[in-house]
Amino acid sequence: MGIVATNIQRMCFHDGPGIRTTVFLKGCGIHCPWCANPENISFQIQSYCEKNTGQICRYGKEFDTEELLQILERDEGFWGSDGGVTFSGGEPLQQAFGLLGIWEALKAKKVHMAAETSLFVPEENVRAAMAYMDFLYVDVKLLEPETCLRVLGGKIDNYLENVQLLSENGKQIHFRIPCLEEYTLMPQNLDRVYAFLEKYKQYPVELFAVHNLGDYKYHSLKMEPGQFLPVAEGRLEKVCSEIRSLGVEAEIIRI
Image 1 (cartoon, rainbow, N blue to C red):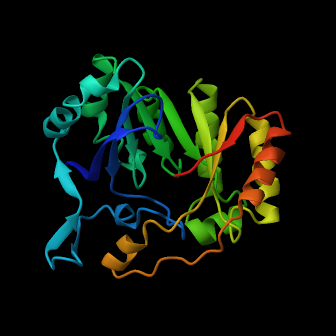
Image 2 (image 1 turned 90 degrees about the horizontal axis):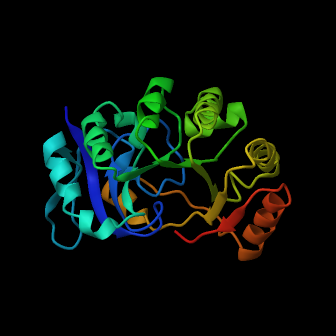
């Protein structure tokens, strides 16, 4: 099977340095209750009925390397010296070996590449990506082992080992924390997050309040979106301040 993506979004300004083209790939090994892209959890191409027109549409399209590369190269004129391509998802590193041809071609042209990853993938996938990625956004979610496994379906040791691997190899990382009172901002999780960030204090951190902009996608897939308490701005500011007190660069972003 080729590379399976749901969207190629142009002129992106929040997915890495400069102006970027972001490829949203299907497939994810975990299942966050707050996921904003539920159409990308399954690797399979899914059909749905478009509400306004009644037209049958699909989440996902299969691309071969040459086709996807041609689409991306159309945007070269917008990237400039500091922009490039970001691979998102879902979990983009799940398709690491299918993307090697794309990565090799872009690397040969000195295109800046980034990935947005949860890091709940096999070590060999991370090693494959490391040779090409210039920049990685790494999620920091639930760090208590049993909660991580129960809520996300992920093994925390897998995540921690992959973070250490990236760090040992000198990769440029920005951590991102999705903020929800019911999960990531629970006191027992925050304590673990602070200890984790203190260990990796050389890497900047971005915090954002989880939104409900993906609810329509849940409904199109006949799934129920999660219902979460809104996170107050003051609450975000307090957490951000506490992270900064650790000597970590931190900021609140709006996604």
